[in-house]
Structures are given as structure tokens and as C-alpha cells.
Image 1 (cartoon, rainbow over the protein chains, first blue to last red):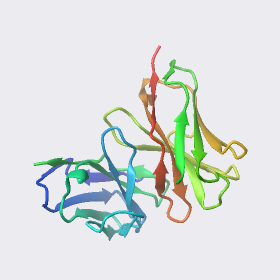
Image 2: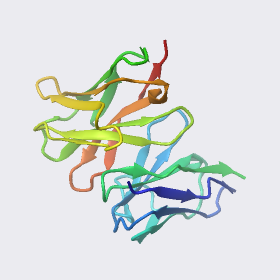
Image 3: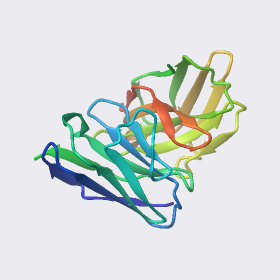
Image 4: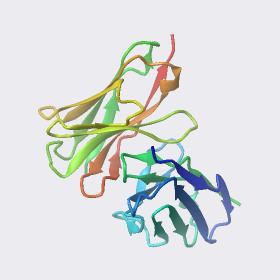
Length: 106
Length: 120
């Protein structure tokens, strides 16, 4: 099983600031990496797939990068609606998710 | 716009079988462009993939759950279902159904989720 490790567990950011979230795979997943956003009481929402392609309707302030084992999700200027938990997911070998990074208001 | 809705008992006794159904509206489950998936999330924890099915009936399961999981599809009702046998308290979770794009193997539409508690 490919283990996905996200850091940090919690990120405190002020509105308007940049947020950088990391995700590491225990072995190469190529570019088969997605990012999801989940708000309390809601289902996850697909943000990024193929490591860097924004899903339909996702604002340009969300960007993804990386390949192999190291990946990053960047939110360029945090809006109030962006405070949530973010999960990375590899789909190179079945599916596994990271444990999540909570982005909270500083 | 496609919508997915989970249904089934919210309480299951230990050692019994958990059964859930996902009803798809606004699109055909027989489309060859999608898989149909189950994912779960224990309270306060992260996401765990259970498996997915193609409209033809081909199934793909999480190896850690494979011995207990059956996913099936009913194209006439536009539904797919999950059965998880021999449940324990560790199977208590919110269960989500989702549509998975075949091209990207990512879930673009999700149901709202349903909480299933395993308790006597």
C-alpha cells in the first residue's frame, strides 16, 4: 500500500495570505495525485487532479505541483471560504488518501 | 447536474452485514465514462477508499477490505450498492458514494454521505 503523508497537520493562515500544503508518497505515484477540499459536514470536493490540473469550476488561486513522491498545493490568497481540511489522494495504485491538513484562520 | 444519494440503515449490529445503496440522478450509471465508488470516513478521521464498480459489473476493491466487501450495480434502477460483512465498531463511519472519471480516476461528484454506526 502506498502511504500518503501530509504536512503540516494544521496550518494557521490569515485571510489574503498564501498557504502551502505538502504531500509525500511512500513510493512514486508519477503525476497520479489529486487534492480534495472538505468543509465540516460536507463531502469532499475535487480541486486538482494529475498533480496540477484544476477541476472544473475551481478558482485559479488553487494550484498544484510536483511529481513522483513530493507534491504541493498552494492557495495564493486565502479567502474565507477556503478554510477547510485538504486531502491528497494517489490513484497510481488503487487509492489512498493522506491524513489531511486543516487550514484554519490565524 | 448529476446527484448521488446514499440510503440504508444508520445502525448495524456487530458481526452483521452493512448494506447501502447509492441512487444516481441527472445522469446514467451506464455511461462508459465513469466508475462508481464507495469511500468512508470514521468520525473525526480521514478518508478510506472501499472500492468502485463499472457499469458492466467489473469491480475493484481496497485490498485491506476485499474479503468483506461486495459492490454491485443495478443499471435498471440507476443504482449501485455496497455490502460490508462481519462489521465491527471500527466500521463506524460516514459512507460516501461518488462518481469517478475513468480518464482521471478521481471522484468529481459525491453524495452527501450517510453515517453508519456499528453497535449492539
